[in-house]
Length: 310
Image 1: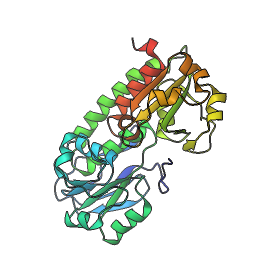
Image 2: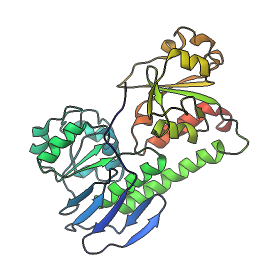
Image 3: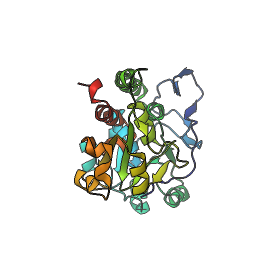
Image 4: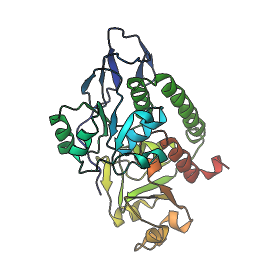
């Protein structure tokens, strides 16, 4: 199963807020002053698109789980009036109107009278075009690294008037990431080879978030030489690379079990299987690029380097 989206850019920055624009460069993103109700705002999303809003959005529809989780995490959950079918976290999303998934219910979205729609880069282009045709402002979040996550949290926090809270959240998450990488990136740490399966025989290649997670967690991706972000492998390739660790996801998109993994022809001879180093991880923690991605990193690092987290 291939994950795909339209073209993107790393340029994540708010470029103007009303007349006043006080900018301080911090880390991977650009922070600005807190917004007040009524301020006109112009900002750039992760695809380099310039979005103009009449003020701080008060009726937001999120059409992907990642932005939904970020919106609630920065304290803007009370501004969310609708979400996609897959957005099931936090618990408050259960009571919100659902607007579809990869086939969005455009009429339902219009009926919610949103002043901003927040999307991920996995929403099909045709769906975004249908939104654009209705003259509804939308922004796209497209993260590939942990730094991107932090930048998007700050971006969403800023345009919803919750910058201070977003800054505090990023500081907390960054400290947790540092606590992991201070151990996994130490010079004397041996980095085992890792096969990370998010769908049967599909894995992450360079440029994807999964690849970044493997490296942060102190592993070596067996697909590190691929030219694709999302890679379909063969049994023969996995057998030839003989990974020391296998991690597979479970969730809505896949029901793979450990028995499925070890019963594949020839896989009983892979080192990870022989040494009982096959692990399952919740797909939501590694494919939703909001605050819970740090939970995923912590769990993945403990799987790859249990000796560092005893």
